Image 1 (cartoon, helix red, strand yellow):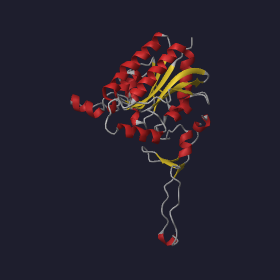
Image 2 (cartoon, helix red, strand yellow):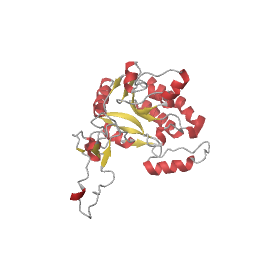
Image 3 (cartoon, rainbow, N blue to C red):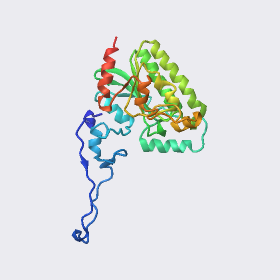
Image 4 (cartoon, rainbow, N blue to C red):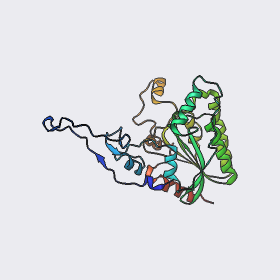
Length: 290
């Protein structure tokens, strides 16, 4: 994978083109044919950004908005070039409940994203330090945790414990996968047990909470890291704010369930911008090397 893809670079933005006066228009004048995908509009500030430059700037808008990134894009940002070795890449769910339409939707999502499920796991280097890494992808069933994701995480932590290597997990999830019911919820306990074995082996576990990290993922391995980092503005919580407000009958504080709110209340150790994430992880890994 190429690191140059995400080299930080100054934005070039386009202005909105205004129509010329009708008397200056030719009879056969047509709108410019702009190839699809060449420009990206920021949903926060409305700025129009060249997509290639957006990628080089870690998919961050100059207004501070963070576009979501795929698992493969995240691996390019974080790992040293050409060092990633994926594990359990063919592991997928078998639809344990025969949930109506789930099998067809799985195949459709796999074809659309190029992923087998919503998590990529493997081994690679961060500034020369060997680690195991797991990255969730919100484009696959909103990163929901099913049996495949739970099994892949458990296997990764077990391998890391055997090889005495640290683990880094980037979370992005809507919670447990409803189409797998209780089998999905069981993954919370299974992965938490694997994390405990890895910790008993004396190894470091770092979680990086990205937008969104919610539900059963938050209630299990996402908050079990020895060090918990978060991206700016990330939504982090269990139930949604509307559900909480309806339950307690009170208005929630401004910024509730955002990374900054959790940092102020001691649930997150540090908020790290995307362009500084690799360097921050490299420092933490060096400090904890034995």
